[in-house]
Length: 192
Image (cartoon, rainbow, N blue to C red; front, top):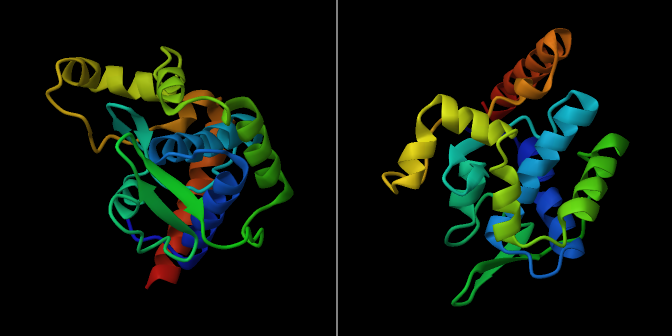
């Protein structure tokens, strides 16, 4: 998926926000917190936060393009963050000041809520939380036979996307899908 400049700016600044507020921010922890921004926004506001796909991977939900970009040297997010590796993990550091241009007041509340609730958790604890049997990750992994494949170490990733509508009722789910489709259309047009 090609991200629009606005989505890159929002993701990049969300990473900056996390790097400034969460000590020892590892790549895995960052990926889980970005996912939680999306999940909490859907649950509380019935709206997407980023409107990007999160795939079902063995270690929980992952925004694949973010994972790939932060794997070696950031390209999409080079203006926003830098990475440093040690023998245990890859850590994320802010390269710029946080810019709130892409964020609503509700977005800032969601980020602060997620950081307050999960910012002090380890990456391993976050993975365990997101594997909860009531989570969208678990539901998608179970419905697509991935729990067994992950457990047997046959695969560690999939292209199955998290369906956030599992947290919504009929009309809420319809509104969410419409909003998501609008975001995708606008992003597609802006990426052209």
